[in-house]
Image (cartoon, rainbow, N blue to C red; front, side, top):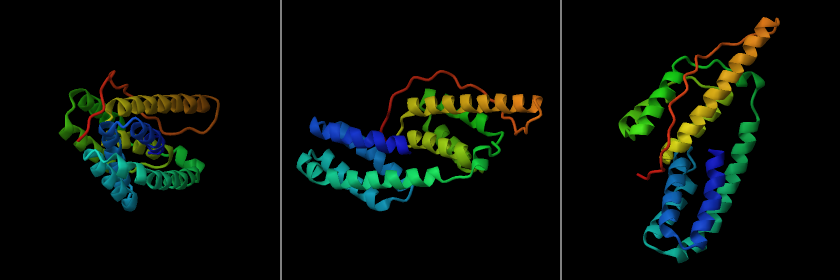
Length: 201
């Protein structure tokens, strides 16, 4: 979520400066969905107004109202950064549901096929899991990328998350062998290679 906010902040300014209202509309559309998903409805409504103006080629409205929107976006980014930084170390080692690798594998296959129904089903399966700590935060970032239909980015984040889980497993396995405290291992399945494009609903 935080990287998407930072990226959108930069992109919106660049698109408006270039008078590229088509990509401006696509970018603000994605951010509108993310904001609504986390309950930031005031900002989401402002994003909707900017999207409508962009679709109508009203760059004057966008130029007049984008600074206020970006200011709110940056304030939200700061609040979320502060919130995510306050967490227990124990949460970083929270148990990982055994179902997660299989869900990730299904999601990656769905990205390849651009199977919207399967993607939605697997996201619902993720939402049903009891995720905590670092894993929860990283999965939320994957869901944010899925929401804006940036499937290539979501697939890359899945790959990186599984890699970090594998490294964690190795770390705790080594600790066990040397008398340290172990932790639950997760069977990691590497998803297939994916090269996709961002799509808009």
